[in-house]
Image 1 (spheres, rainbow, N blue to C red):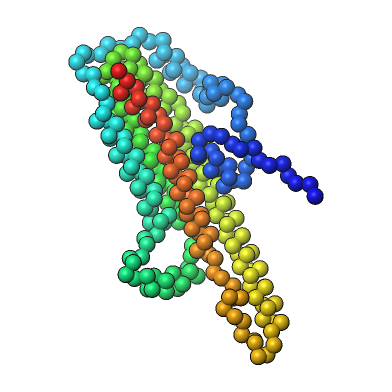
Image 2: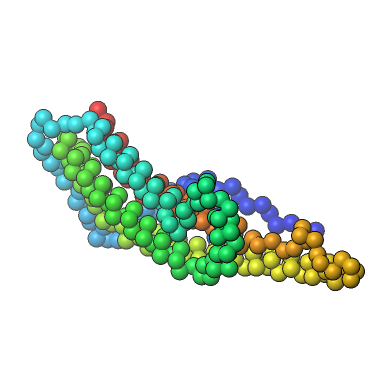
Length: 268
């Protein structure tokens, strides 16, 4: 029997690899140089803005204001930790765990709530979009702050800050559009997992029915181990974990410009 060729292992940011797996897409690494690919994102007005910054003389900077950037490094660390915590503790993605002293009550409650699991993706989509908006706003504010600090260090650094500002304006719309497609891919993934769970449950129920029919009247009641198991919590747990992983990977991508500005600020 012929087997499909294995997918090529994709190297690159975790976000790309996760999206390829969730979307069941065989992504091939681009052979086009980065500069050529980036140029496709820029319009003629963006090119004029970049050319203006690059050709302009370096602005004069007041002396005696150089800083090592350690305070900003701590600020970046604090923001990244706060955003990561917001993702891993989100009420939709990480439902509160029961207290150890209430384990029996929690098990009963879990069984009672199992039929009321979310029947659609709307709640998860809303949560993802809210976290995306928070990342964009908070990281954008930090990026602006770092540029201001960088512009006060030296003429060369001021020019770098101006270049970053132009790049942010030029690429932000395209970035927002691309990252905005992630919730749609997650919605399709959600439906695949749910349908697979429903199919598994139906197959399990059919097997249990066959076993019951084959029993004698004296053994009409099926043993507990042959009863179909409720797996709805398992597929939702898988989905929540993958959704959290995507958000954390997106956070890594969004923080890359910040890390570049911080490295420049700390350079001696």
